Amino acid sequence: MTRRHGIVIALLLGAAALGWAASAHEFSLESLMNAFVKVEQREAHLVIRLPLHVTHTVRFPVKGVQIDLANSGPTIQRALDALGKDIVLYEDGRPLTPSSAIGRLSLPSDRSFERYETATKHVAESPAPDTGIYVDQGYLDAHFIYAIASPASRFSIRTRVAPELKDYLKLAIRYLPLGEEGRPMVITSRSGRVHLNPTWYQAAWGFVALGFEHILSGIDHLLFLFCLIIPLLRLRQVIAIVSAFTVAHSFTLIGSAYGLAPSGSWFPPFVETAIAASIVYMALENILGADLRRRWLITGLFGLVHGFGFSYGLQQNLQFAGRHLVVSLLSFNIGIELGQIAVLAAMLPVLALLRRYVMSGLVGMIILSALVAHTGWHWMTERADVLWKTEWPQLDATGLMTLARWIAGLLIAGAAVRLISRRAAAFFSRKPVPGHTS
Image (cartoon, rainbow, N blue to C red; front, top):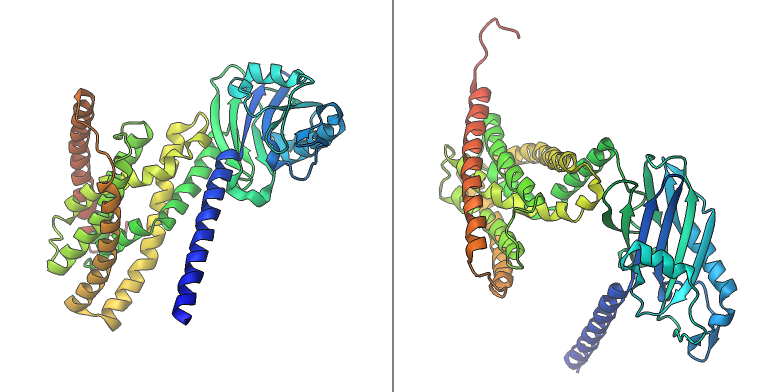
């Protein structure tokens, strides 16, 4: 009887979880605010569309199941006041106060927010008296105007609309600076204040921090690094190996950022599977006997694969680079390297203590590598199952051209990895000249 009750409870919890997941998925698809931020000579304009189901703190008058449009004017004004406080536009770090604000309610089928011009025109018009908008099924459209000092100022924005929804409520912004090409970005209430046109040093600092956080949160990359250094006993060996890994992943990371990586739904699971396979291979090589003289080559080849993995954490954040794409790419890579250095600084002393007092000699290296291989094998089989179910592309002329470019690029990267690794190894193996203090 206890077992039967347990099965029933588990089924009920599973059904509830599936229902919650389905509703959460549906809710996240609907919870999107669309906005334009346009900068002119003396004014900045924020035109925004907010789903009505998000404005739960403001209740519109109703007639039956529809909103009473004729008597909704005061409620729209209260909603505009709240929205003007929840979404703040900054000029050079100073919060701006709207000089004017207008708004209206719109049908869910309205498509005027596809362009800035049609959106502003639509907000300025009143809905037809016979328009039927059901409760929580339309939009609140608003147009805020701000007085600014100069169109060359540094602008930023922050949203605090329904912060309890966290990342489920997104704000899609199309930033339209004066005399420049527009740039899209997506933020949430958890993004904080986001720069719309950052300076190079603002972009650089943000992407250094992003790269540092990315490597620390990438457990598979960290496990690969750990597997690399298990058999290494000298600092110059570590420097040479890590240099090869750095050059290799930098090559594919930058190439991916410029859209040179293979496209298609098959490629991300392929990369994830290859990363797991690299961990298994390195662990098995440690167990069977690693040839440290050629480890830099194997490390470089796998570093190319890991670079594609790093690029996924970068691509979704390039929207915050503004006009400083190259600076942001280099800064992201610097952040990754700083993260690697921090991890190695923690790993090497711990590994030295383990190999000296707990698992010394060849047996200790085999045990550590076996544990790593076990974890990597599970990751590899799980990811390979996803890859197996993904449709692979047909190799046409375009695919062959892309493949040829990458083969040529990999050869160049391999030559660079070999050169830098040998130079690094030679530098750290030099013995100081007696009596020479420089």
